[in-house]
Image 1 (cartoon, rainbow, N blue to C red):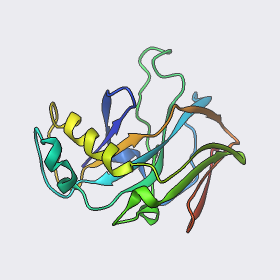
Image 2 (image 1 turned 30 degrees about the horizontal axis):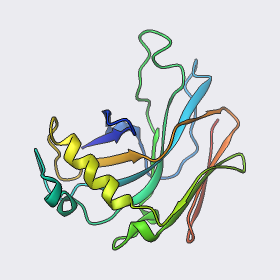
Image 3 (image 1 turned 90 degrees about the vertical axis):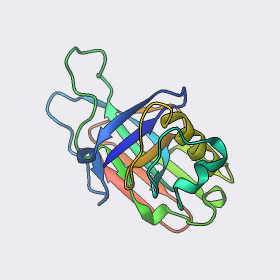
Length: 177
């Protein structure tokens, strides 16, 4: 299984499944990491293997969508030879899933109580379908893979900060330690 993190500009990277934090555990920063980038995402599990998926068929490759948050080292790319994927940095909880119409859901990401991102009524399934079309032009997707589409620009968080993901039915705080 891989997690494909699709950025707003159209580029993407594949994260290993060791980056998955599906238990909503607090995140312990590795030594030497002083700041993280956090970006809210909408994601889905792939239900059907595909390569070169046509736009009109893309929606058939997933049934539900959920909201999460992707973390990465804020110094990656600045410091040479630094890993860009750290363990437990893909925060994904299927309790945010709305199987029939994720576009009707609302989602908010706060850092230390300050709202960073909030959306409701957006066209999340269309964003996921477009990402699947683009990704499968160059990469095959298999059953069980996760496609995560970033929803806005990343914000910087540091040790001691608290991320809080919430929807109308659930609230999940994650402490950065």
